[in-house]
Length: 180
Image (cartoon, rainbow, N blue to C red):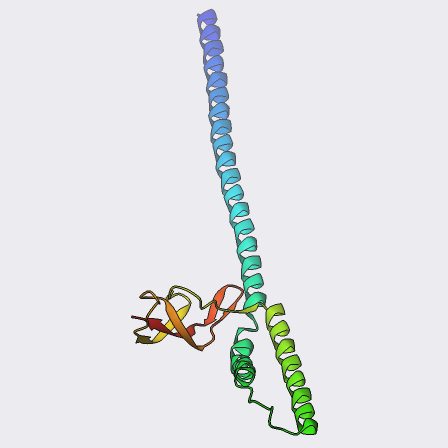
């Protein structure tokens, strides 16, 4: 009987040890799953943080790139006026030589200032919109339509106001007259 009790107690001890081992193993499995879950969450958080850093850097670059947009937009009429002055140069052949020389010197100065404006605009990322060929509503604003011989319908006939882009973004569309 004692042997039976010893054998039963040994058997019970083995069952308890086995149960403890199983519990420990289950606990380790649960802990391992929790660790994997936490690690995956940490990796997602790290990826989100890296994406946030990249997006913030892109936004800063865009801000710097377009920071002068308002200023340049306000200066466009000055660029237009220089182009207009040079487009309407009067005939000075009837002037006296002294007056003609003074006029030509003044004109050289105006052209130099216009050139400086154009260079500064180019360095700031400002460029005129092309107005040859077919009308494109992305870059052009049609102010009128006219019948014109020899020009296909939808092509630009004349430019009323030069359009401008800042780093590829339309700052002001070109105002044009389009063929019917």
